[in-house]
Each structure stands twice: as structure tokens, then as C-alpha cells.
Figure 1 (cartoon, rainbow, N blue to C red):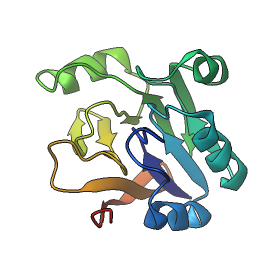
Figure 2: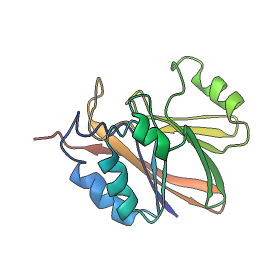
Figure 3: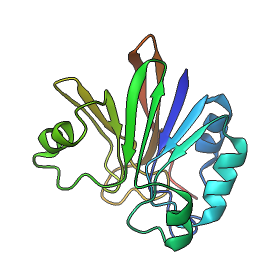
Length: 166
């Protein structure tokens, strides 16, 4: 099962549209996971119309319309791997410990908010943040992630660095 992870798309505030490499990856994914801060419903509708399956949550910048349509935390078992998705996890210091305590029954936690790509493991929990495809903030590039989930394993976690916008 091929998964595409994204977060913090912030459309149309940070970009007019999703980057073409991300849109192209949508068609290759069995599941798209979005960890919040969509900003507009059009992005949710676009990904929802193109995805085989979409799992998403709302973020701190998402208004009442998105909050009505999306949960704060989403959970799914994909390829035998237990996933949870949340936007915010708090400060980087102590993140792994806090998340392991909050999500003891999860194999992978996908989160956003910081726009900083993250891939760490604590105990049996892997934490993944795909960064942002539209707002790199203090990072050298915008990004998203892909991975495979099968046989209760996560493999091929890849951070995709996006070219600068023109």
C-alpha cells in the first residue's frame, strides 16, 4: 500500500495551488494523509476527489467549515500498521515521550504544524512530519513524504524535496 503524507498546505495564503510533483504523486498513492492546516475547503475537495482514500485532520489555522468536516485526530490501520494523524504535538523537546504516552496503541504518528520534516522512532512509535509543500519557513525546501505500508511494516519512507516556486 502506497501512502502520500502532506501537511500545512495553507492554500491560497502560501501558494496559488499545490506543487505539480505533489499532485502527480496523488495519482500513485493508495492513501493520502493530510495532517492539517488546509486553510481552504477547495484543497480538501481536490484531494478528496482524486484520492483513492483520504485521511485528514484539521489544524490550528483551519476555520469552522473545515473543522466540521474533519476530526482533530484520525486513526486508521493501513497495511497492518496502526496510524494516527494529528496536527500539533507541541514543542520539539520531549515530543517523542509525549507522543508515545498519548498514542500508546499506534505504530506511526503523522503530524504537522512546524513545517519541519521529522522522522524519529521512540519505542515502537515512529513519528513522521512531511513538512509543508507550500511554505518552507526556515527550511531549505518545501516537502512531502511517501512510504509503503504492508505486512505490518513501514518501508521506503522518502522525503520529497520540492523545487523552488517560480
